Length: 526
Image (tube, rainbow, N blue to C red; front, side, top):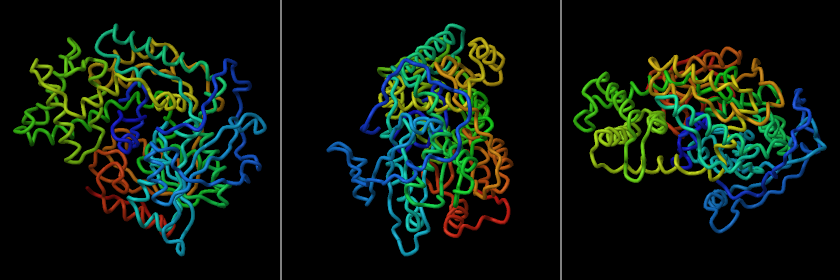
């Protein structure tokens, strides 16, 4: 899941929203379209990567790929080196077709005290990480001193043999307020899925399990007996899968805003509406205290009623906003951006957006804020870099959809219209996985292990809800959990995508520096 596009870094927060909810690099190669179904979809692959891939020699080179490659230029300026490693498309057939995964490596700034290599994944799925490793290094100099920081574009993402289904839209939006809008989302989802049919030989191998295996090839090729890992959002699921497949090859592992591995898949967002509504209510209390500025209501309940009226008004009649149209399909996607964080800055931006939407619904001649203008432009545009198609491909490859019958989704939406009126039609509707042309090649990973690791997260996280974090904590029986109380933000470490918290940062930094976990679960306060 991923928030609607903002800046490259903000998009990487990856609030784990399926393509129905949504809100680039120059490729080195592309995946050829093939019509044949993959042979042998069933059966798990072994964990051990073939030695010819593990022992391959890495050809390090500069990261800049051309005069317009500003990200590559930044990596080069920071002293990074980049490379492409060869991995099997299907680990069950190591002598068959291969693909490339692209990596960057930023060497430890204090080599005399270097501990090892840390691989970073900030979320997604479907987000390039090669460049984002630089943001981690800048945010945490103490970590950068002791670790080589490695960013790997996951298979089919960014520069790693990119897959692009040429989707004309970044998602299907909300099912809206009536049957006609739901039927439109069904047609859109089916159309998007059909555009990936030419990649049938590739799609079953886009799984997180295979990305974890790619990580282990990278580890081995780097000459590391063990590797450390920092993952947030979807990156925590990738980290859990890696620890399950390769428990003896993990060093120090940090999971920030952890997903429940038992629920991850195409319908992960189905029950997120209530948690996002709780985050919306937290914002409403903030906005109510500033009613003189935003005029959305002087109490929390009044602000929430304003949101309810806005949802009903737009559902009855679409609203013109500049050159855009706001309707029952895209309004919930705009309101979903309350997930951007609980800082004063994030809430002020969101409040300005909502105030403009309310005035537009009243018929006032208003212009969209720059944020709304950009988001609405992105929502109306094509999936230009294939991000959302790959995001969907990963989720469809990880776990079969709950149902392939659209009526199942419509009944669920109707059943929850009263208790989940704004976000339910967005999170509970069909996804392209409902019509996906292939099925997973393997069953989902059963995560239950004793690998020591550190988890951090917030009680009000709207995207990886706290009860899911607790479930993951139980499954990872030697984990320690640091909980940030009373925060409604997604990701909590290092100020990468949310406000810094000194207590959380201290716990993570101490563990990464010493390898010593807290003796017991602890809490922090905002």
